[in-house]
Length: 124
Image (cartoon, rainbow, N blue to C red; front, top):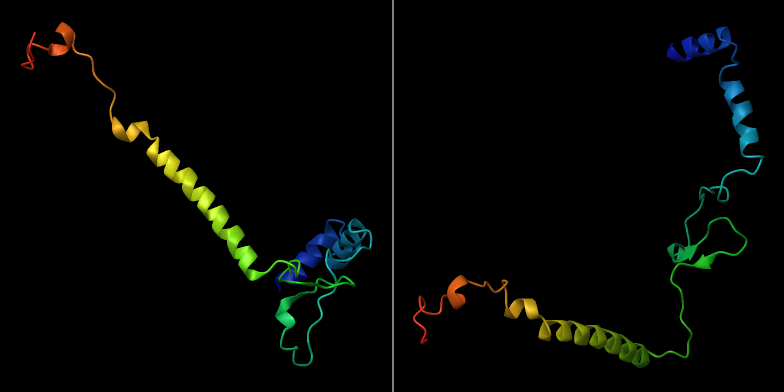
């Protein structure tokens, strides 16, 4: 009912209803279609490793997991990982070691009368 009323109202106001909105929206894309390729609905079971391929409709689908150069072994990559984590750990330890705010957690207060030396029972 609401659809018929909106079509009738748009015709009274000079519009052509749904067909007019489609006619105006198609030229805005210049006939290019969707930003990615057409969505293909599978009609048969997918291959077992289908989720490992990023297929966005281009002629050359790419793997989801990037492969590194085969010359980098697992022990070399472990050494790089440990070296990087060790570097950041050493920066953190240097920051903790050089932290002046934790040694003096408040600003030193200066009192009158020679910093209250006699009142605090210090020798004159």
